[in-house]
Amino acid sequence: MLLAATRWEAAGPSYGSLRYVELAPQGPTWATDLIKSAGEPDVVLLPDLGGICSGRVLKFVLFTKPGEPGWASMPEVVRVLRLQLEAAGATVVDCGPRHCEVLPPGVHKGVGMLRLLEHLGVGADETLACGDGPNDVEMLQMAGVGAAVGNAGPEARAAADAVVASAEADGVADAVVRFALRQPAGAAQG
Image (tube, rainbow, N blue to C red; front, side, top):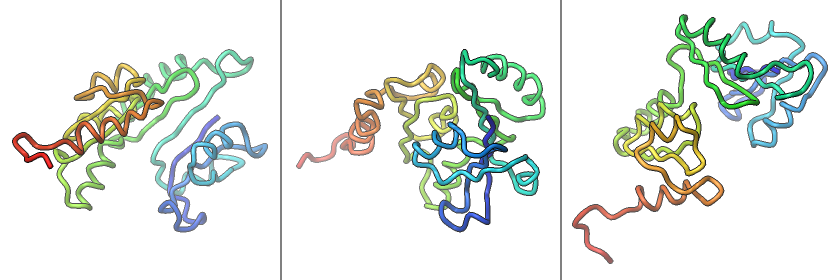
């Protein structure tokens, strides 16, 4: 199963025209439903990859069904993709047994965060970033405070300045209270 994140101007201006484009020659799939259930924009279904070659692909997401006949083993897919693509500067992010992401050179959440902060006129040292996976590493490293939620993987934990409660136990709220709402040293309590 293959998704590509790209600008899809025909989808209109919502979400900045960003869409996942799914290779789905037989119509909607379980991946279509997965993206929809995550609150993402509607998926654009394509019968082949010809339509996405005209635009800049921001990332590819590959899915599999572990243990199902006819589906590839994701660790093997990640290994082969890294051998083939990382020498060209692409990043292959191992997201676990069900999917991985392939990012073009220089594309990651840290770059996106810095572009947003530049637009807002805010320095990276003034930010709090929360994450849980290997695709969050650069963002956690670039933020003034990088907080990994308690159920984060080892890569996110290693990149973070702190570990907060798990996502299920309101880890992001924990991080906001601890780091964004804290009183500076010597500030008056009121």
